[in-house]
Length: 278
Ligand SMILES: Cc1cc2nc3c(=O)[nH]c(=O)nc-3n(C[C@H](O)[C@H](O)[C@H](O)COP(=O)(O)O)c2cc1C
Image 1 (tube, rainbow, N blue to C red):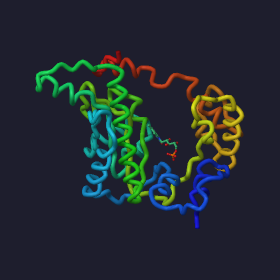
Image 2 (cartoon, rainbow, N blue to C red; image 1 turned 135 degrees about the horizontal axis):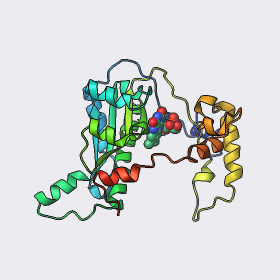
Image 3 (cartoon, helix red, strand yellow; image 1 turned 180 degrees about the vertical axis):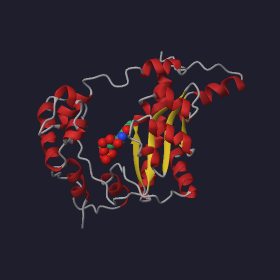
Image 4 (cartoon, rainbow, N blue to C red; image 1 turned 135 degrees about the vertical axis):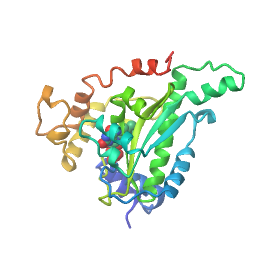
């Protein structure tokens, strides 16, 4: 019998002492063994299934039941091509059987407010965050439901590289912007790779935040990852600036990635796109 302990140990790349005696099955098994899928067959995702999965997306919790998100299912060939062209050669997501964008949506209630004779006085950071959280949870709910049927999925932040263009293509009005694109299809390879996660004691804190052992634990983690899934030259960040490493620790790669500003125009875009962010 495969146990939960074995699956958790695989997720962390080190033995854990809990979850023994619990058979690995059902939702917990599905979540512990999941991974992003980037290779799809041509088999279509039937509308009946897609609509069911979209209902699962909408079953996610939502802040105050405000439901401040929208989902754009992009089907138009020209729009897909235009979205794919934004990412210089990285057009596999928009070639997936289904490509969608999960969006934060402040507009819906802004539009309803005057219809009901009220002001909308919450064009602020709180509403920005609530929309992002709602859209994220809907995306995750869709993803788990889809993966449960055997579909593969991958969220796509590349769509945010050119926000103006993405909004123009999908005709997203002020107040609506994509938190992520999302590729879905039947996997070409049955089992996705289980990507190793940081040790639980780095991420989970009891009663108080404590990162005294961060450096040691993070470097151990990097070494464990390297054994099963080394970060090759093609995956190393900003090699033009920092060079290629034979052993590129995860710690090195993430600090390299964030050593240069990513999407520095995002706040300016949001302000232009209807968000006051106050
Ligand atoms: C918000 C978000 C955006 C992402 N954007 C991309 C992307 O643009 N391209 C990509 O290949 N993967 C993308 N991913 C997938 C992550 O790379 C992936 O989740 C991470 O490497 C962990 O691997 P796993 O999902 O297989 O466990 C994204 C994930 C999230 C949550």
